[in-house]
Length: 449
Image (cartoon, rainbow, N blue to C red; front, side):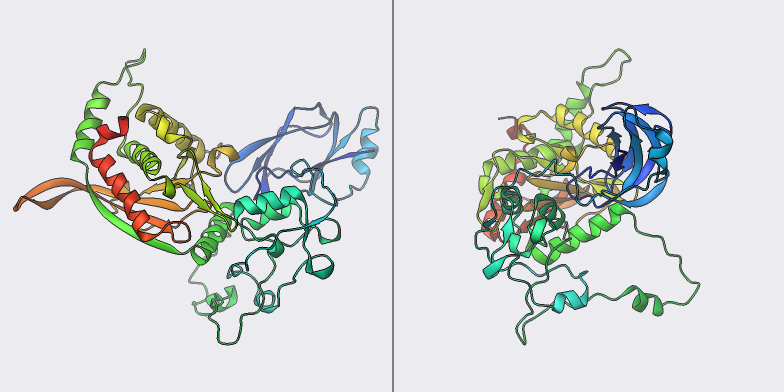
């Protein structure tokens, strides 16, 4: 029987992908582990390996095809001893459900624990859906049937499993449903708000927006997967996470002097090139990581069932790339030297721009840093990327007049703004964190003790 090759889900939130390139052609023999294609996701370009042996009988999705849904049949493989022409001529049957590699064997259905009322669905949800009352469960008596793995993932992500639309047998919520819900997809509409309760105004439709513009005065560039993902996640964050912001000015004169001294003393390779070159941002990453260790109640993630307190500071760093941005993560940054952080960031940035990062290199983390100082921006605020509870927005370093001892002096100053999730961090606690950061960034030697 012919074997269907499906569009794989290369990350938990992937719904569609672009088939960038076929590395095998019809008639080629493949064995398990052979790389057969390159798939572009919203964040990266990844290789797809064959999981069966046989001969490529038919390629159904040509290279260059965009927005191919996960689990669509992209090619047909003829097994050993099977007629290749017959396999290629056979009509492929679509997969009834995604592969269950990520799904643990399900035990008997069990009701999920009670959970608080879910937050409103994203504004992008259809108006008719948003107005409908939310179903209370997928089983008798309003109970919600879900797999143990789905409940665990939902708990870790702070998602009410009762609000997730199940695609398993009899509407059972499975792991893939919860993973999809993390990006705002596949959520049930909340119950209609009581009369007089505030609600989020619906956004304008495409037709309404274009009706306000003069015909022929614009071009429409279709959104790619990355831009759609960024829009969905940041919209959900700003609607569902109560942000507050703390700004402080830092004197980085000592930092700049230390940076110059460290870079001047950097060892050279055989070509007489320095083995590292520390940037201001490397100091920022290290200072933020150490500050979170000094104020551990800020190194947290909010979930409905409890506060997740992280042992290490895993710092995501925003990297601009064509069409959007990505946040590769410096793991256990508080334990790493400035030179290690610098070299990791250079590697991450290069691979991010060529979309070669692996999902585990940009998913998760405990906080993030966004630095627009190189663009001359003196001050801005950044949107928190859950499950983080904080993000630090870093402005440019510039000479400013400051008053010291009643005298005006010129100092190298840098403004930073900390965005905090008010569910997890209160104002005074956030002030402690940004104060600890200021102390470290102004006295970089303290990062080493």
